[in-house]
View 1: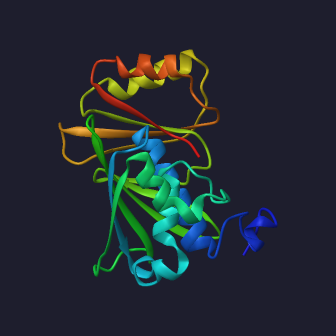
View 2: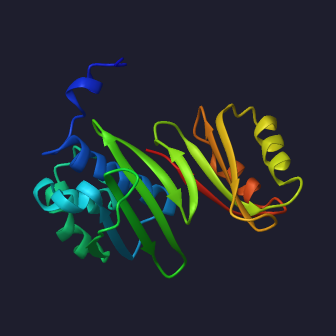
Length: 220
């Protein structure tokens, strides 16, 4: 196995005890909040596999709540995240599921406020590294290591081209792009990873394009 840095071996700087079950969980929560765009008012977290079996001892639930409050894995407030969530008015429920997931460290996070609701699925793959693998039923494969936008759009001709033309005009370099849909002619999802964070005016312009329903941002 090849390692890119010493941190791939010794793990991340974090509030422990586990890089996978604590630091990774905090990152999943934080990325879920990033996609939602703000702190949700209510959250339901379903834990699967080893997350469900060991979450109390490894403080996986606490770390996920901390991430949803936008705490980094090394934030000293992390152990008290449930109390801070209550003070912030974010209601959280935790459930363990018996279903066997594709990955043992899986969390499904359902977030809601008066404006919107969203469901995100994340997995912790070890050493504090994570992957967001589902958004509202659409499959993803995002690590959060580079900026990304997620565009919910109508599945029709010209929408993808209009988005990429705008990015080209602003000289935004696309590192990775994936397009998926549930059914032909229904809603689709564009996942675009870029080298640099996009400015809000450009995101607003994309959001105004014909066929674009919603633009979401994901950043670590």
